[in-house]
Image (cartoon, rainbow, N blue to C red; front, top):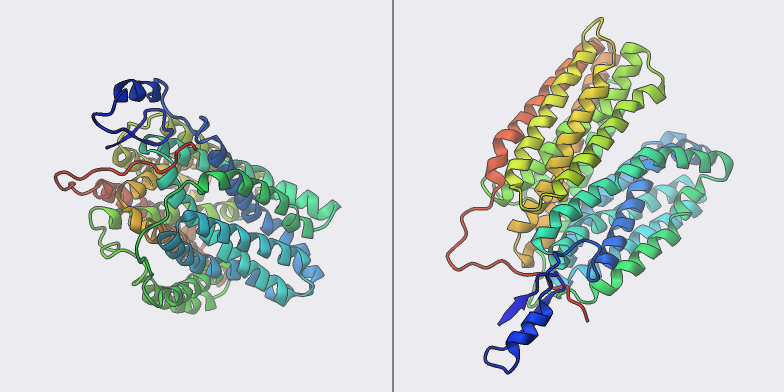
Length: 492
């Protein structure tokens, strides 16, 4: 029979009836509990966190370098295309990464994702024309999508269930530093050196992260049997990605044409998503469909207001760009603090933490509406957005743990892809809604204060819906005799 030792070193085989089996088992059992940085996990943990940090840094920093890049490449009319190309391609990458992980294992998928992301960085940093720059951003997007999905597959195979809350807490924290310093560092590099180094400078650091994580990847299981993905999934992903790109573009426009673009994007998105998401996601069916749905609700309700807040503070209260960005920093810090707190309670109910996270998010969203009340000023956002960040710090890691708990190993790649696509879709829908409201304001159809109240109201309702839906994210009753698979990561 197989027995996993308590240190998390991995599965060890002990044969009943063999001489010395009891003493051998005693020697193998450790009294210490596993940790993210014990002998077995320290290299993969460091590698994964480095990859997350640098992908996050590039995501946060690119907006700062983009004006200089498009000016040098004479592509001002194409300004929105590098963002849209990345987003559309990332959806395709998520499906490609999920299918590759289920078919060949996470090592192949992660290698392909990092390679694609690195090639995109090199091409973007070396581009001599705007067309090549946009194409490079698309290659980056495919790689980033594969990496995002592969991280969940690796987490499911290489880490025991009790370590996953801590791992997802650490991954959440790995986004905070880039969010705080990424734009500043990118601005300094662009101003004093070159915008190209924002892309090229990450290449050696990405390589270091991959070198750290590869030894652990060699010891992960490779799926057995034929795991060929359903035909046409990548084309459906491309259609969904185009729909998401259209919604993002609609959110960037400040005219009434945004409404028509958003409608077309919604139609493409609805058709493309149907084959990519588990049945029952829209209805919030108990189990995995509800897990995927709650991820979309978390991301959409938070990032919708996150995109609106700086504009509202600057237009309604005359805040400088730096002052208008302070609430976003408070939200990021709240997210990091709550992520670390939930990671220290691996035995806590993930469903309960998810529900509390939604309730805190709803409270933070609702309190943000005070910035639209005449005479109140913008100061409530400094507190309310920290509360919203606390909610995300509890909810996001918890829903990630629930995904791995309920996804069978042979479908973990496809389910992780659906999970990430729900995140991107929820964000695009809600940011698109905000963009349409802002466009209505620019067209004189709606005062900005009213637009803020409508946006906050709708997104608060979505967060409340998530709190209602959270109990359904628990696993359905397991069949008698069902077992939980152990980690496949072991020392050599």
